[in-house]
Length: 280
Image (cartoon, rainbow, N blue to C red; front, side, top):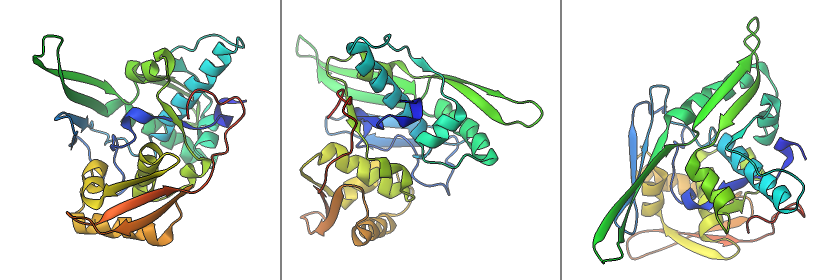
């Protein structure tokens, strides 16, 4: 298959926190989001002068994860070489993978997305115990992509190809891990327009899987990094419940001790290729 025609994959390690902005309205340049973790650590997302990468920009990272997964499946089957951290898709392949139209302005948008992805850094702080029992604070940080190069026609400005270097943490999770930390995304994910809807689908995919999960509205609001008030965020969740258009998951609301609860229930199967063996 072409690079754009493989099953979409995501790194399950960061699917329950927003490492990007969910709104196209707020660029969030030079800003910071912090998500607290149950172990006492946190995830810190910082943006650069061109704005924070959006959940739509992150589609390019999904393409990188999908490329690595497909290449590793072929490598394990003896059908290809072990992939490196860099891949070189044609811009038209990026647009097809992300289910975007192949227009001139879309090519410009790809270059802008790459710029934001490079400038958006993710720092994960975890607390754990050392071998001697003493508490440790472990900090890891990297960009959503490590580097990129874009080639374009000088007379028209039309981007023809790009080279993207994926960060070490992402490469390690897919290529070097004994059990790759990837999950298959439903193809209709790319057709979803609300950023909150995309985030809730990612959450359902990693938390509910092929079963059921319950998350409080309050925690979803915090993990989504939304700059909106909790009341407005709750209204957005209720709109998703009313529409019930998430791929493969039904949504419902239940009362909870500390506020409303979102129930996410799996209802179907994922259309995956027969060669898809790297993740659930």
